[in-house]
Length: 184
Image (cartoon, rainbow, N blue to C red; front, top):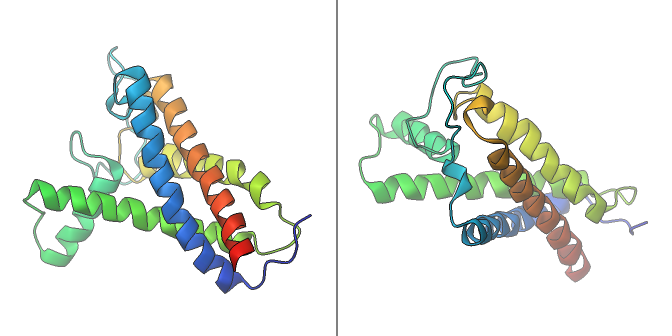
């Protein structure tokens, strides 16, 4: 059993930093997976024809062909603020990274707040948290919101890689939260 961690706000702040670290680790996972397999599995699609689960969006398609969900979110936010889509490739890339890191930090903050109780084992909660983000965020919410194609578009290995990347995120966030709490 871990000692009392303090208040939820301190947990949020610790979690924000841990979430950024988890996002960096997730990027490391993708670099390592690409180096080991020789391809970036994030762009893999199924070869066979249409599948009933190619589109599960409830509100229509909101991503462009070849655009990641974070790039789509960044583009949509930019369009709402600027009144037109970003034109420069560098701007699109920066927006995608901004969304990715902001979301990772936010989720780390949620984790930090949720694990302030001494009844929660931070390290045991990490893999569960990463799995939950993958299942409910990457495999469901992103697809239902039309920020990516449906699950039938992608091969099983891509779903498994995405799960492993989210496990990496969850374990890193949990480890960073535990270490930061010890330091503070």
